[in-house]
Length: 193
Image (tube, rainbow, N blue to C red; front, side, top):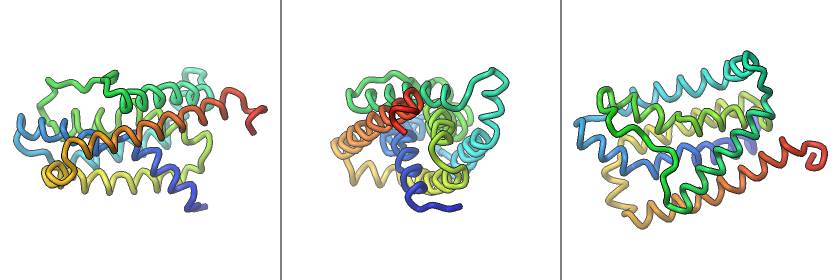
């Protein structure tokens, strides 16, 4: 059943993790290297990857004997690292700068949009939210990602470097808070809920 509050929460969490606004400099740099980035292709590929992981990611985990709460704790640690990266201005998760062939898929769709952090977050969210609300949150984020990819030059000129840095740090703090909440909920389920 669709739940607006869950959809909003999922959308904001994924927006923070995907951090497409913070990726604008990378997208602009790739555009300079390879010419044109196919926004539609990148968005579609990332969307298919995220939805596939939402649907079968849990089955893949069960092959390795890993539960969703175990994965949620690991995901919380990755989300925490992403948030720290955003706040401190360090780079822990590095995109491959050599991957210029089919730049719309690699590195734009994967790992920039649907990277390890995003996929981990999607499975982590399954521990707290209904699958249909996560799917809607993914689709809303894909619409936003597509719009950003289509207008990176305009956004760069309007927000400027300082504006992008401020947004990145704000969403970094949000990610740290989310990571702590997910960790507490899954590591100490009796004490928290």
